[in-house]
Image (tube, rainbow, N blue to C red; front, side, top):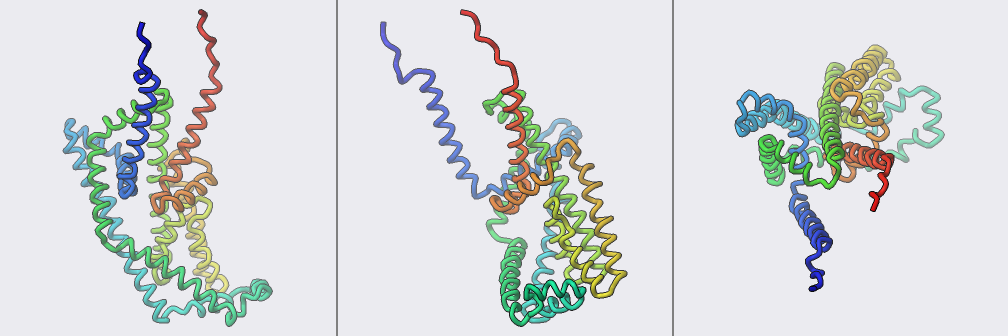
Length: 363
């Protein structure tokens, strides 16, 4: 009787297959890495607008190419084109602000001195205790820090508005992927579900939670941030403050972070009005910020997100900040998604461990 060939055992073949899949996956992700942001946003857009695409698919009587093209066209008109116009406006206001800063039309030292002058006596005493009222000694350090930080921030803001070859290529790659995700989304999701080596119930739960968190993050955080930033820009423009669109954008970006929010922008301005004696503007901005802007998060976010998909605010804050540090601007979506997958995977593990172990079959 011939002995079995050790090179043809099922265990060796399976390990070799796993090794091949691992190497191929690593190389594939290396190829995709230059377009990581484009691929991520293509997936996010396809998930968020998938219900809308299903309506187009039903209206086109099952023609996937027509439905995918209609969905992509509508996204270009209602999302991407307005965002491009907003970025152009922000870039223009940022360039004007930098020009005034460099020409000396905006004096940071004068603004700091004016702010210190309108503070109450006890606040100035505390600043004097720490040597903060002697601007002659600390002004140079403050100005150098603010100027260097402003130049870095401005260069990044202006870089967003500049049309570069990398941006154009990534943009069209994103649109191209979105089209095929709409057209072949069902088949791709089924292939991914079959390929994941998990229990089918766990696979469905994991994919469902992934899609739910992406929709919640994009719809909830982005829409709420845009609404709060718009309301803040309207208030600043009504008060006659320069750069209303720019500061509204800063307010929208801060609104992406729970427990921080737009209050970091409008509260100092309201405090300045109070200390300088302009009580009407201070009270009006405080009411607008606390009631109108503040309630947007409490009223609009549950409608867009839903109660069942919300994670604790402290976890969302840490995940968002960590995601931005690691993945850049894409991290404000990727971070919460990773945190959600982390929670779901550990919950599935705990549920699996609690299941009773079946006794071994009798021999």
